[in-house]
Amino acid sequence: MGGGGGLGATVKRGAFTSKEYGVAVSPRVTNDPNPPRGGGRYQIGQPYTVRGKTYVPQHDPNYQASGTASWYGSDFHGRRTANGEIFSANAITGAHPTLPLPSYVRVTNQDNGRSLIVRINDRGPYVAGRVVDLSHQAAAMLGYVNNGSANVQVQYVGAAPLEGDDTRTLMASYSGPQDFDTGNVRVASAGNRSLVGITTDFFGSLFSYADAT
Image (cartoon, rainbow, N blue to C red):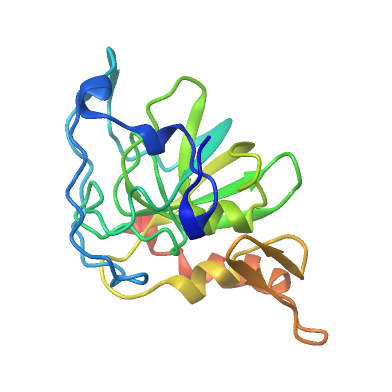
């Protein structure tokens, strides 16, 4: 791993090359540290092949998988994601090879118990054993930025809206220590209030529509 500027260390995906993977890296469209959220398009897509492996995108409401999560940051910040959104290392987003874009998944770090709902708006990772690639922000909240990777469980939650900023909603889904400061991310409790207590009921109502559309 090498240095990633103010966003900390980068991982293998930071060395992504078109020659190695057979797919192009999108051009950077902004240097804004907090580019606009949303604004992409809904897509599932056709089967595609990367490094000799064929991936078949599909809507699978029962999707659940365990494996390794990696993270990506400054090298991809400001570039277009697979569905046309702008990737922000400071947003709670991720990449998955086959799930619909955009969609929500719950990612649980099995090494420390931290859990978070993440917006999937990109494709990847294309490395054996890796099931999801998360933004720096999401990886920091799940506590594995310094390690570079973590053992995780990924569970599909539902479709994500195309427009609007869902940051507050995703922050509210966090389950884990009430106070932590990892990398550029800080979540703090306020008195007796906790983010954890609202997760189940709040997201149960929020995503009740997802698989009915």
